[in-house]
Amino acid sequence: MTPRTVYIVDDNVEFLESTRFWLSGAGFGVQIWHDPQEAVDALVQRNRSTPACLMLDVRMPQLSGLDVHDALIEQDAELPIIYMSGHADVPLAVQAMQKGAVTLLEKPFDDDALEQALEKAFTHATRPLALHDTPAAVEPGATAGHDEGHARFAAMEARLTPREREVLSYVIQGIYNKNIADRIGLSIKTVELYRARGMAKMHARSVAELTRMMVTHRV
Image (cartoon, rainbow, N blue to C red; front, top):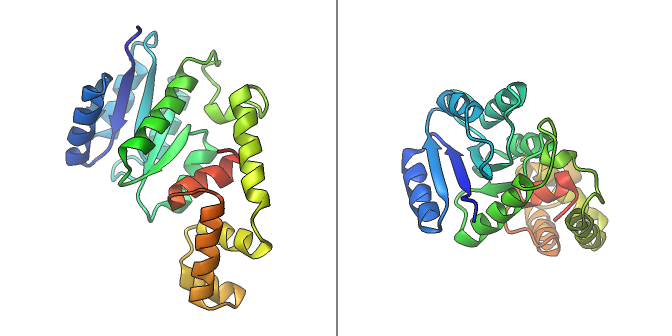
């Protein structure tokens, strides 16, 4: 079986080491960097015959995850990317998904969420895409998986009430409940209720997961 490699770029050294330990135990080859520029330099030179994906933190002090992504695109060195985001990074998370990320994980994430994200990433890694194509560049309906993902999203979104849809549209912009309440003239508790109901209907376990679905229009 062809070995699969996970590259990780994050400025949190403790997170890097703990994630490398988990992934190595699961049988993946793992390479980590806390310096994003070093990561870009190394990834440009990587062995592209090995299935690989990149776990990339959205917000870092030197280069953001978006900057790293842009650098890889510019040097024709793209690979499937799993973005990782803190709770306060929703606007950046939206940009990440628009760039074509495979998926988005909100820290701290559990083992199941990581396993599902890696499965998606390696599906993209083995798909015969042109180097300039990003995962989001695949046209809806190009594969059975995309058909199913879009259909499931559409079915779940159709269950939202207009008010739930309105509240969720503010949520994925990173707007706090209090500010949402002020904008639409409802109490904070009512906004919280619509938010909870909407996320439950969308089967979103986090704002990051909701953002990914609402941006890509697929599950």
